[in-house]
Image (cartoon, rainbow, N blue to C red; front, side, top):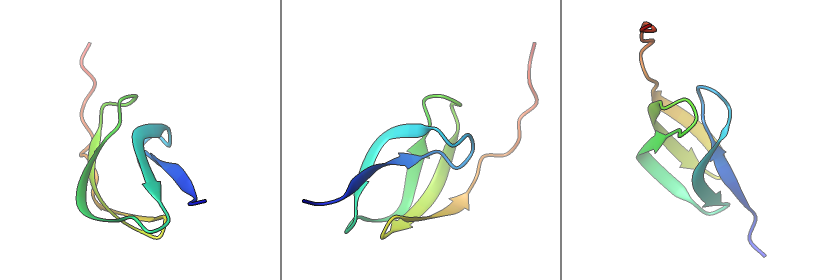
Length: 62
């Protein structure tokens, strides 16, 4: 049986809606986190995640 796991958000650390397997390879994947509403560009190879572009810090509006 293949090992699978959810991709975790590099900003807040929560699980995203995307799952990967051991043999999954992603290049320039736009990962969106439904919890913190951030989007990052990532590369994935053998469960190793590399963040290409993290979102810029945005000022909080009240």
